[in-house]
Length: 73
Image (cartoon, rainbow, N blue to C red):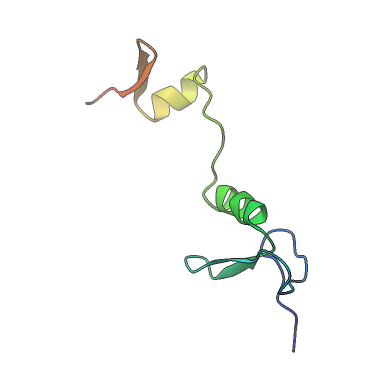
């Protein structure tokens, strides 16, 4: 038998922890923060840089009056 480990930090899990479970990726986590970190990593999420012209062009976005707008809409 092998102990279950956190899907983010690889820490061995025990029942005194605030264990989180994701059915979508079938992983256990030692606490909600570790789960959030893994979710953001899994989704390749990052802070949006409104000054990144390449990203704006790739995603067909404009900023008009402070609002993020799809060019085609």
